[in-house]
Amino acid sequence: MEYLPLFFDLKGQSVLLIGGGDIALRKGRLLTRAGARVRLVAPRIDAEVRELITGSGGELIEAEYHRQHLHGVRLIVAATDIDEVNRVVHADAVAAGLPVNVVDNPPLCTFIFPAIVDRSPIVIGISSAGKAPVLARNLRAKLETLIPPSYANLGELVGRFRSQVKAKFDSVNKRRNFWEKVLSGSVAERVFAGQNEAAEALLIEQIERADADHQVGEVYLVGAGPGDPELLTFKALRLMQQADVVLYDALVSPEVLELCRRDADLIYVGKQRDNHAVPQEGINDLLVQHAKAGQRVVRLKGGDPFIFGRGGEELRQLKEAGVPFQVVPGITAASACSTYAGIPLTHRDYSQSVKFITGQLKRRSAAIDYDDLAGNNQTLVFYMGLHTLDVLTAGLIGAGKSPDTPVAIVSRGTRPDQQVLTGRLDDICARQAQAQLPAPALIIVGEVVELHSELSWYGDSQSSSVPIA
Ligand code: SAH
Image 1 (cartoon, rainbow, N blue to C red):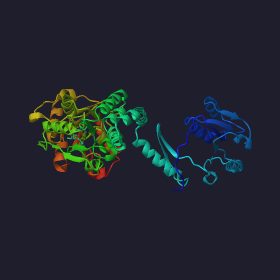
Image 2: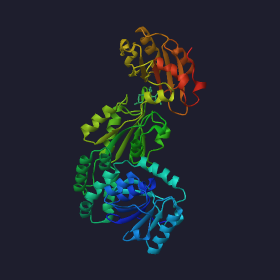
Image 3: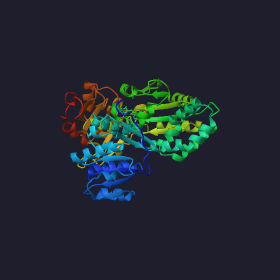
């Protein structure tokens, strides 16, 4: 280890900052955020720097650096681009036994600034020992995305109850176990959902009931998106990575499933048309059962759980059973497939509205109000419509929709084997009979489909697309 990471308490401490431009501004912001009183020395000082320093109770000295400015300070930062000055500052600091940082000049530093992820009171510093600052910053960007800003609130909450928990448990191990549960369970999730008061109430309850060994878990109804794992939300990923049990269905891609916590029990409750691995009531029971056993249960659903996902039904049962839950939206198939196929769902010239319709027809009868769908300037998106394509297209034409309205079938959208088949209302069935694109597939009807040949960008869709005749 080339540097020892330490966290410096600078509250009310005097820090000498040399320089009056942009770099000084950046360092000045950091120092004042940590509560330092900054003495800033420079012959010319930018207005913004001036404002920062005076506004935070610091001191401005408009002059060339001189050794006397070191008097009474605890730390020195040189943020000038004049080598000569930097070298003198470094030499003076070393002679005075004071820690010094010359920005972007590691040989003249006795301490260095890390890249920082600030979720105060949680702060993460990343250093590459000055060798690869861009790498450290990349790493920081990764962490920024993984750690929700509300970690700050979580840190505060834990801080407030720390002594209470300490008094409650007589051993370090018990305390640690307790906090581990709290921080990866429903209290933390409440904080991340912005429900700070509910989180606090739950924490108090958990502290009180800590001796009773049984606690109810929680269910997270999570939208897994259409298949491409990069289309998961940060929140989905986080919950998947801390789940004890994951109940997933047929639409969840193997690549997405791969991202669940290694130790989690993965239970397939998949539904393929007419072939329910576990019937809906069974799924609801399983959710309740696992949560009541104190587990963190992720119910992973393809796309968005509230769009043709029966999410509402599962939640109702959880509510009745008194199991806490949260819902995480996902990218729905309509949004994902149209994007990956280069078909904007709305377009100023062609379509002013879009409708999501289920093509799952009970008894294959006309449960759909085709008259409502026949109008122009709208895009229709049919989910679960591949096996009723003949009924749907006939219904639309019957209601007066033009037979040459463009249609696209997007099969296995966003996945490596995505295929797009285009045609018209009156020939798409024949084309599909020949092409046999596999499920899951989405049907898009409307003028916007014409844009596919122009805007398509994903995968090898030229060879798999059949152009509109
Ligand atoms: N909740 C899901 C939809 C569930 S209904 C969502 O929001 O996307 C199942 C239907 O979604 C399938 O029959 C198909 O029409 C569509 N679908 C889901 N994923 C798809 C994908 N990757 N490509 C094409 N269609 C998909």
